[in-house]
Structure formats: structure tokens, C-alpha cells
Image (cartoon, rainbow, N blue to C red; front, top):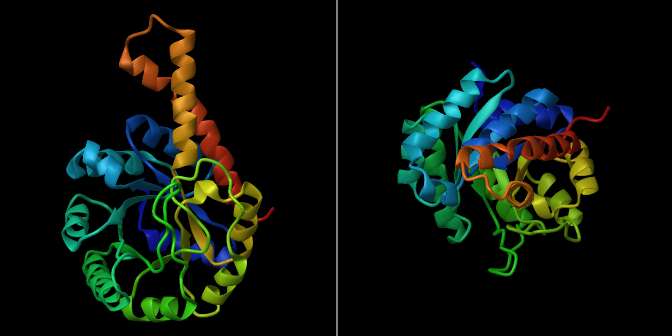
Length: 277
């Protein structure tokens, strides 16, 4: 069995100079492609069920799907609840077999974010599950603007919550469809100077690949969340299949055709985050 917690894959990454991909899952085909890519690259992987995924598929079903893949995999696989906004969702995910939960209190006042995140971390640790928290706010492309992480607040948050990984806002943006200007490395360095936790970048699709590689090997960023980039791969592959086979109506055939392109795109991302040769 290769089911792992977030701490079990991020602590080696922090020590050895690489990062692990947190891949946003939406269905069986992408889950399977992501695990196949991780096995091909001999890399650990974090399979993430965010709010959109959970709205489409019930949490107990997701837990069983992800655990089945993890139990059969030859590499460590983390089952991660992404962007939970209340303790009840985190508790439900733990009951469904998830090995990591991310409580997102980033829109709350600092003291309330600390208090609620600490409660979730205590609940998770009692069940031998990891907990990720967020300080600062990571905005959305063409939507709510980001609020950069204050290094002093990050230090207080890390100390008072007992979390296993810290999501930060340093120029990263959710749902960015192309590489942006890159992350604010000065703010990142100031945060690194104040906390020893593995750091997490949400909105990793918008980070230029060369910077992803450099930061994976030379910073405390140990987890890049990748969603939009791979959803674009899925959409492109599906449209191509529909164009190439206009008479195909079997949904299994149509969706299965997305797996090979997804696997190849994921392998490329995993190589960007791998240790220096």
C-alpha cells in the first residue's frame, strides 16, 4: 500500500530540494492519468479534490476512488481535500479516508483563521492525517484580487496552528490560463526566514515553468498546485477526439482518449519539480 500523508511526502521534499505536484482531480480519467504519470516518473503525487470536484461527486465516492488508485500505485499517493471552508467538511473527508485536509480560512481575520485552522490540525493529527493552512489570500484571474502574505503573520500562523504545510500568496493566482510574470521572490524569502514549514503555491499553472523548476530545487516551496494547465490539456484532447471521430458517441471512448495526453503533460510537470540531476 502506498497511501501517504502530506507530511510524509513534503518533509523529504523540503530536505532534499524538490517539490511534489498537487494535482486537481475532476474525474476518474484524470485521476488515473495522474497516477500513471507519477509511476512513470517514480514520483510521489498529491491527488486533490477541490470544491468543484466535490460538488460533482459525493465525498464518500471520491474517497473510495482515490484510495483504490493509491492502494494499487507503486509510488506514494496523498489523498488531499483542497479548500475546505469549515471543520465539518474536514471531518467528513477524514472519515472517508483522505490522508490530508486543507482548511482555507484565508478570508477570515487572522485570529479567527488561526483558531479554526488549529482546530482542524488537531482533529487531523488525532486521526494521523496531515493539515495544510493558508495565510494571505490567493486571488483569481479576472476575479477577486490577491492579498500578499505578511511574513510576520506567517510566522505567527505557523507557530500557533501546528499545521504541516503553509499555503502562501506571493504573486500566485488561481485559474491563470498562461504563465504570468512569476512569483515575488523577495516576499518568499522573507517568509522562508520566519518559518521552517514546507510552503505551498496555489495557482501553480500561472508560474513560469523555469521558475517552478528553480524554486522547487532552491526554496522551501515543496508543493505546487496544478489545475488549469491540465484542464486545458483535457479540453484540447477531447475536442481533438470529437473532431477526429465525429460519429463516436460512447462516452467511455471519448473520455479514455484524454488519458494519454494528460499523462504526458503531467509527466512534464513532474520533471519540472524533480530534484536537480
